[in-house]
Length: 419
Image (cartoon, rainbow, N blue to C red):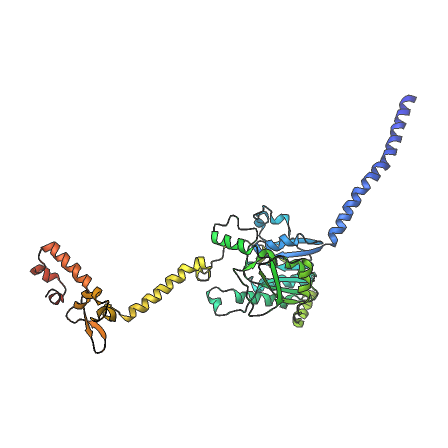
């Protein structure tokens, strides 16, 4: 019995000695988890709207490399698993946005977003505490007339205005670019011409930043999507609101320091005091979650393919349409002139060196040497080709082109033709 008691006491004593050691070994693991939670809490929450399109996807691909960024995205659910040419999914770069506050908002779309949707999303971000808003727009002056045939310049301008008017106290950076092309999304593109154009534009990594100018233009085939996607991370550190023309061209990509210096050197845009007051008033009367389902729905709904006006498409598509229209207009103009060979002086003028090649016109046209013009002969109002066809058909059927039956079925001017 004494032996059993000694064994039990020894087991209890061993367990007591091991417990502090185990406790000491577990503490570093919990400490590491606690440090990770603190580090994650200190990251800026950056929300990218339009992450399902090529431009937004490219921005996410660049922002994931930025330090201290907790990246969230607004995109259709099925597109989070879509891969680019490198096999990387959107879910690997950003998490689906589930609500809450954000520190910055980036709107990057391929097509002009609806101005009301932009206003609602920017207002919600400002109310939640966003300090920066970045909007990718388009360079140039809006054209109301071209909007009727599918031009989006006016829609881009309206979306840009909605962003500026609803950002409140947040620093707003408007990045006006040309039509963006390129990025790792064209390896399986069935439009080989578009894929080749994108491959060429994708090599242009030089970036030029300038103050907004309505006359600004993007040179070449378009702007490099991969190049301008880097500007979102730079704009998140801007201290003042700016409207910037961002164009790309041939050359090497600038480093982050030079981009920040170029952005800071640009003049700031004027503040919108009325918008700031409106945002503060909205904040005071808003209760609950600012990012309601109605605000997020336009940015997470599946997008239907947009019908593109073929006349405004790239030359490879629009060229045949414009060519057919030009030929139709030119042919209609020629038909309105009612021309014939009799109106060609070198063909009907007996003194012309080329007249010998058009002697058959002597029976169809009359040349007036005084006015040096030709006119159709009154004795024959049929073309030579039509006359020959009629004679051949009658000869093949009757054997005699002067037969009564042939004359009965011939045109009224036949007597003048065969005489």
